[in-house]
Image 1 (cartoon, rainbow over the protein chains, first blue to last red):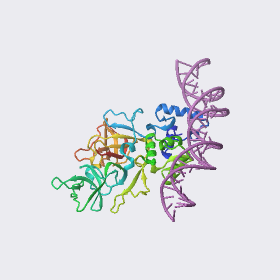
Image 2: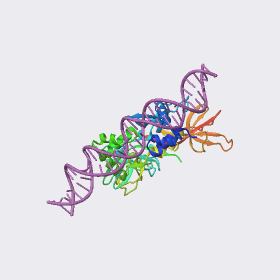
Image 3: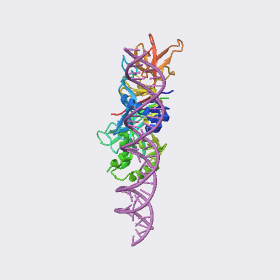
Image 4: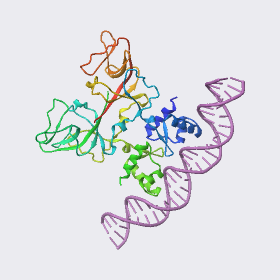
Length: 188
Length: 188
DNA sequence: CAGTATAGTAAACAAAAGTTCACTCTGTCA
DNA sequence: TGACAGAGTGAACTTTTGTTTACTATACTG
């Protein structure tokens, strides 16, 4: 039998909500709500769950991943009490309401570690600071590049992070749509 | 006034649960539960919420980010009905119960786009296929490298994804602890 | 072996949750 | 101008929830 915290995690992941007491009866295969009540209190003490304004809510430990920090020599692999948990969504996404995801095509940003097939998190906004990676429309064409400004002409232009591409000076216009806040890449 | 869906998103993000009807009264500043009832039904139709075994649950649209796929020429920026939503946690993490996060130090994996300061998602297991990026202990030292096997001696060894490092042949032993499933990097 | 902690059953219950009904107010538009 | 839709009020009501109490069985401990 899978242990109960695992069942609970699965339920939370699948439904994006915690089961009610009566649902836990079935989930854990017990017949008394008091059994559930006791489990829950134990889990609250252990940090898997918490009481939030009197209502049951999952704690980080239930849905986030253990975060081991920097790998160092005497590194005790998962000593059960790591204490630190990190949710990638929280870590990567600053302002969810103005962000979206984009799949990258092409190799023009390899220099900064953005490859074909990667997914970037873009935060919508009309301007950007120099040197940041922007999603822009240059002469009606969408692209992902680094924003630069010409010292003498004071005009903005785009550069790839890959020496095999030339710089991109707009013939007509250059519009910024957002800045790249993060990249993620899955292997295989 | 912030619009209500935004308030709801904030609540969900902050508490990892949906508010109850009575909490929504305060949150939305209304005084009748029926008002809430109607809002909820509208949101269910719009795809922000859903009914899961009779219980209210958030739908992807409430907590995940819009996913625009590959950037292409006539690309309509967020045409409001994108239909596709992606949660990074779901996308990146295969098996939460055997995964953990590690912050990367050093430049030995730059060749595959893993830089100092990046966070990798590691899935615990004792073995790995050749060519994958592994978390391993080579002669008592922890490291992140690519797993290889010598054709003639049939022995496993590690290689960096950076030409400036030599290959690593274990003097004594080589232990695999997991494979790197994904990387994430935040800019700035 | 007595003694105590742990995990469960069973039943009872107040509080809260979600739903429904009837009604009001306001703005829109034909 | 009148009617209709949208958004909200207020109250009543049923069901479910989470909690409590009392008791049982099993296992562990000194």
